[in-house]
Amino acid sequence: MLAARPLRIASVPSGHVYVRHLSPPEGDSRVVRLPDAVVPGAPPGQWWPPPMLDPEWVVEHAAEFDVLHVHFGFDDRTPSHLRALVDSLRAAGRPLVLTVHDLRNPHHLDPAQHAAALDVLVPAASRVITLTTGAAAEIARRWGRTAAVVPHPNVVDPTRAALPRPGHEGFVVGVHVKSKRANSDPEAVARALAEVVASLPGVRLRVDAHDDDGGRAVAARLDDLDVRVHRPFSDDELWDYLSGLDVSVLPYRFGTHSGWLEACSDLGTTVVAPDCGYYAEQSPCLLYRHDESELDTASLTAAVRTAYEQRPFWQADPSYRAVQRREIADAHAHIYALAVA
Image 1 (cartoon, one colour):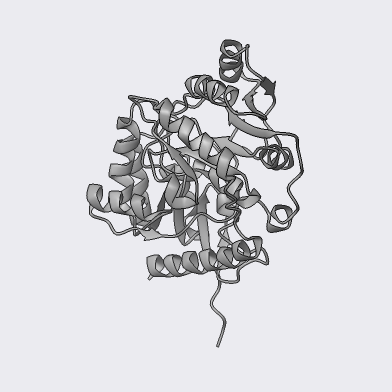
Image 2 (tube, helix red, strand yellow; image 1 turned 90 degrees about the vertical axis):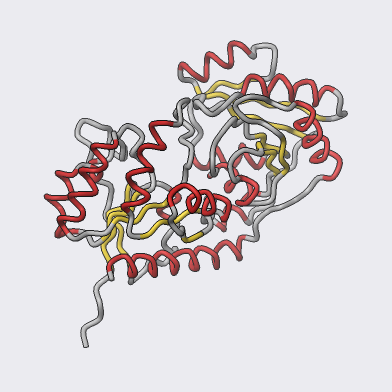
């Protein structure tokens, strides 16, 4: 009997670290993910805006894939465009699998656009996946769909994560502006943190920002603090940065899940996260109250003090992460087989 060929997954995207880690390191005979489609006029390696979300791409390439698996990249797509995509998949006999990473888009101030997109994609998907039970419950409430809960895989390679954490003087609390997403309020958080660390001996605050317009604007308004403006870190630079922090504070006002939190978990850096979204279900962390209406500085102070006084250490076991990655690959292979069947 001939062995079954692997299922061919058109993944949107394919090159993202989350998606790469849905397969075990040694590869998977059951699943092969197509490389990201070339974006006309974009630099090599840029996957957005993804051509695979165009109905025309589906029509032209239907013979080359078995499942379209959407993760990210539909930020700018209208409901009518997404309905056309769904129609083209149905006409081609190709199922849609959707992983709901974001129930609220971190790049959009107004939630309506993302909600309208999900109103098309969630009901149309053959199978729905999400990362936490809280997100799955919200999906059930909003759309009546049962989402498979498959946890976020490791972000940092287990070999790198297993290295000893470097020593440093004092206790370092970090907040990263990055490129100032719509869901982020780094200025208010950094100001509140500056007051907290001033009251704790041996504690210093480090603020980082990308050297784009958004990052530089925030840095200019925080010029009395220790703000470091630089190009985006490479992966190795980011792991070194996170390993050099005792605490990383997520300055989000809304959101759902976080790859940054997962990287901190891999490296053993304590996270102080807002109580919006489902961050606390991903990995152990300390919470403070922060949403679109209010930053509760008292709860932020309490969380940082707890981190300082108790020094929790919640590093994910690298050997467990390796086992978990294979379990995640098994779960996806099973879901793809169900979708095709």
